[in-house]
Length: 403
Image 1 (cartoon, rainbow, N blue to C red):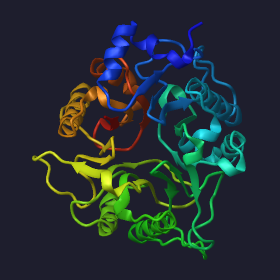
Image 2 (image 1 turned 90 degrees about the horizontal axis):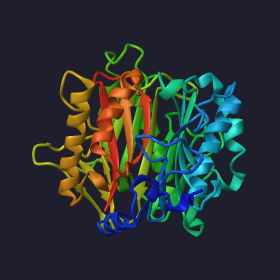
Image 3 (image 1 turned 180 degrees about the vertical axis):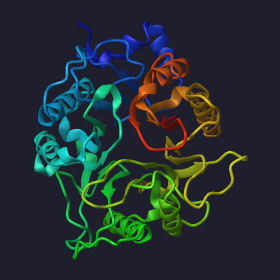
């Protein structure tokens, strides 16, 4: 049996090839493929780069047999156990986890999911978290969980704003968690901190959401301008024709001077926790000295997005990119070529990518997406999370790359 800590050898045979690959990167990385997983996935279950571990979205099926247990409680347990396999392959445990996204097929299963999910963490070690309902998950899954972990527990710290400055948590998570100099902020909605009231307008909810995040950032000694990447999730019952997206942007832009907005990926999904219509997550850095951005000359300044990528020291976060073309194949290729151009500006290429998020209009097109993905990442593929969202484009891709 092969040692999972030397799992790179499962992806790129030959010690010489491994040495050449490692030498081309400034930050050391391992592509993890635990023995519990069936071979042949087009992505790596985990990528450990420096001290940060990016874990691919883990679904509620046995990673070798594909068997799915009955009920959301056991399905959540399966997804979390799969997460554990990747953590253990990296020499970590659940106490190293700093941020998670929980993707549900049915938000009505939130309570049961919470109870099982929370049991994997001690109350002093809850990571930041965002929980969302999507219209589709891969392979008929009911839950998919994506996490980031950090190897040095001494550099993990919880950020808790003063009582009454943000709404109370609705589950087993912390407002924000530092991993080294990087801050992972839980998904925030637009309820007022004390009265727990919700503005009936999208603009009001967006403003309150950004103000709530501002309180978390303030407690961490940061500001909105320290963000490097955000996710904006919203509901649009009119089916992308209700103008919700433009209403969110009309307020979101007020928190960033023109040209200073972080990288971003934004999506219409099927449900958010409670009755909120907007939820936003942040990744920010306190390493202001080594924060920067790259933007192609062809991309103008955007009031809401980097239109390229934002650097946190050696880590580059690209904005979500949708490609041109009539088919998924064409749009996927164009998206990845756009990302390739952004990476080039930062002195990187596709081999520097360690984590991707792929957003499909129809998860039934997973095979077509995988075929292109394999072409662009034939060896040492990055970790990946795939979900279905409501969007006009067939596909959108967001990437994290490290020098």
